Image (cartoon, rainbow, N blue to C red; front, top):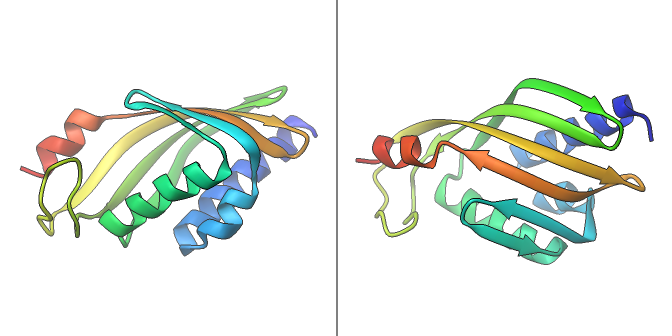
Length: 132
């Protein structure tokens, strides 16, 4: 796949998540994908879908807006803004009903038409401060 094809794949994944179609979004992830975050690693399509579902349950109106994207070879780098309304417990913080917006960035490695690795970073402290 070309770098443009890889960018299109990542854009489609974000679009599917925004629609709430986590099944379609995770179909774009390889069976053995590894999702690296500062909080730890998640491995495999099913575990990644569980993380996505938990996030969707906590912020049911979640929205991802891509702010910047570029690619080189099999890697796609994305900077996005995540937003949603806190409707369920999140890491020990009871639902507040507050709207949040968080800046995030990630590197996605695409292989054989699927996402094989994700390294994602977000302003976790900014998020927690918005929930206070």
